[in-house]
Length: 403
Image 1 (cartoon, rainbow, N blue to C red):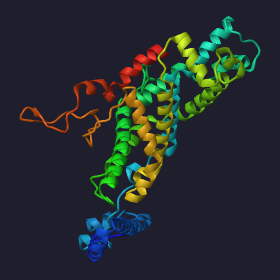
Image 2 (image 1 turned 45 degrees about the vertical axis):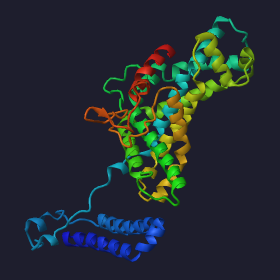
Image 3 (image 1 turned 135 degrees about the vertical axis):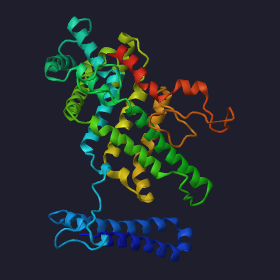
Image 4 (image 1 turned 180 degrees about the vertical axis):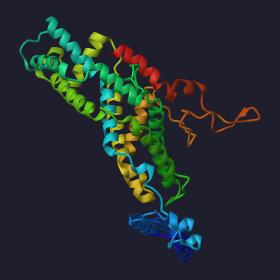
């Protein structure tokens, strides 16, 4: 049990240790900046071990109040003799990874639903029942029959659309009673991905321009961490409910749909080589749609990988070398997602603003004496064409046409 005097002494001694180490290794730290990370991590680990040991010590029955108030035999004569707790569990470490992974799976499912995979299967069912296509007793025809018979046991399309709206605010379906659309998801998701891509872009530039570059202004891990934690916190309360069960069932449904589309009699019917060719052929022939198969599918794959990464405790690492190594896992996925979303007009790539308020989607040009400052201007046409906040509106129109 730490007293207030011990508590103050601990942090004073830690500060003195940092001063002593940095003063003695000043020259080495300049020539080898990674040494500073190693020293900082060792001292932080020492401090955390002491704090953790004190947290596990059982408090007195009165929680230290009698000593603080000066009551009884344990009354403290000075403030330094009173008990002081080290703190409570950090908020960002209380998020369950399973729920964030489930959100990533639902995001993956949503992109495939928006492409039109389930609509294609439903159209094949209509054609099969009407007898307007040359299907009878093949593997694909029998699977279509089973797909139709099992529909009464599954979540309906309305349930899926309501889940997309509640978690991502994608589409225009009504949310279940008592819930509300997650209007902040896409802004936070796009902002986190942008900060990841900006981090690695700055890192590459600094490594090229300056040998052994280590300037914190190039690639700030604090900005990336804060953007990731904001997104995790946003998803914390939106990932409760039937989400985990729904994503398992719909992933099974998606797998079954692709087996149908990849069956030989279905592919032969449309002269296709694989299931994706069947999807695109049906969308063009019967729905007259503009194909977005490739960018949507890659957004689903890369978006799910990014959310899976965010579900782990990688975002909480404070050591630069460790954080960079773990962040490298999603570096290419973030760049690919942003490029696909930007090509479709669902995300922008602001080049000047490092940190944006979470309620803002693009930087407003600063002004001085009524004139725009050079270097931070955003083209009006580009800003009007690519605001992140229009994602929901755009997808509402697509969902109306799609579903």
